[in-house]
Image (tube, rainbow, N blue to C red):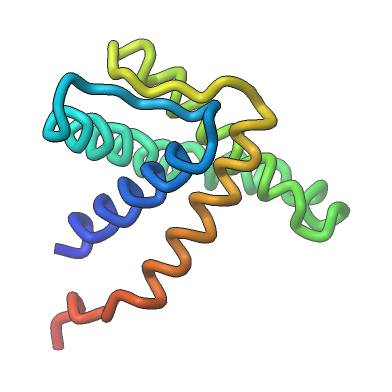
Length: 127
């Protein structure tokens, strides 16, 4: 259940970023197909963040410390661009126009995800 909530949070964060930025787009013929596209892209984004982001963070740790953590935003932007590239390879209609858009989009996704995790109760833990 926790995985489903995380997927929904990512999908909403991606939708907000696409709504706020012209350079992040997803499409579909109907509302249902747009929701499916967002869920699939959120799953890809989650996998990229789970598998590749930790390795990139560890390898760039000295630079993260040197930049006082600002390099994390660059890594997040690269993960968003990688998600766009993978989506394109799988013929999923999700696109991020460039690095600048990805950087702002990653910031929006981070803030929206954080806010949703603060607001949503964590009742998924079993005791």
